[in-house]
Length: 349
Image (cartoon, rainbow, N blue to C red; front, side, top):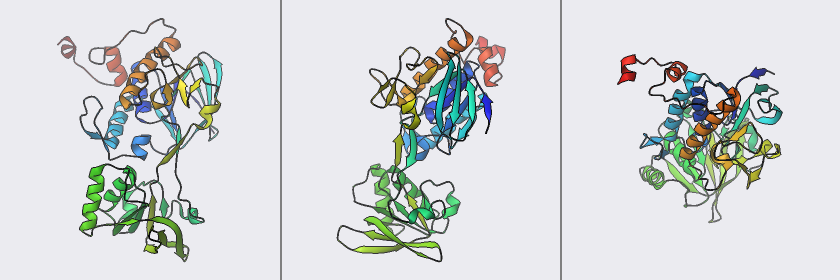
């Protein structure tokens, strides 16, 4: 149990939450970032780390994990504190400039503003519904891959037909002894290039695809040894394995956010477009979690929202009618906050 004091609490460590750290830092504000997932990055990390993103300004082609890495490097000079694998349960408003945030691990954070950047809500993996198999979770059954080395020279079965399942199958194929991808049909919800690559590897006998669903398993000496795969042809096949990776996607849930008495629109938080403040003064919402007329769920939109939210918070915290715009190219104050050294002659040029 900890009691922490900071300027702003950011709920959500996805791309918009990370950029929010940077924008607050430019205003001289410190942030604590809380996320229910064990890693930063949100959907970019959990669902499509290797997928290219083409609409980030100045990054014409970068995969999602690279975008997250760059956002972290940009935010790092402002020394944010991350509380990962932890969920915000309750927010208590003390005044317009004072909040207490309570988490699932009984930690309390006192702050002057709260920014909700929770994407579509708290994510949890969609589980494999086979009775009794959950006892192997984080031993031989994995919904997240933390280390490729764990799968090196192993016989791996991957379940799913989306981007994550294809991406991990192609990645694991490079280090595993064998990879079998199992999906209930030949219709994939993944990029055509990934599907084509998988089919090519199957044709080269470098991996295998099996159409069907896992309906059972066998064990020996406390170890998962095979899974039973039922196909549409009525045949049930037994597939041997050392490790099982399940990529059925992530289930987003608003969770406690729904109980915070915020004005909502179809499970999204209503905000004004001047400050991206919610119906409760001092609580803001940016990114996919918010709603306003004309809203588009784009990372690019979230970046814009984060910038304006930071200005509004600074005005409220500093009791200023308007905070001046300080340009990162020329402002000595911003350079000092960022920890960069710029020669005076460079500023004059």
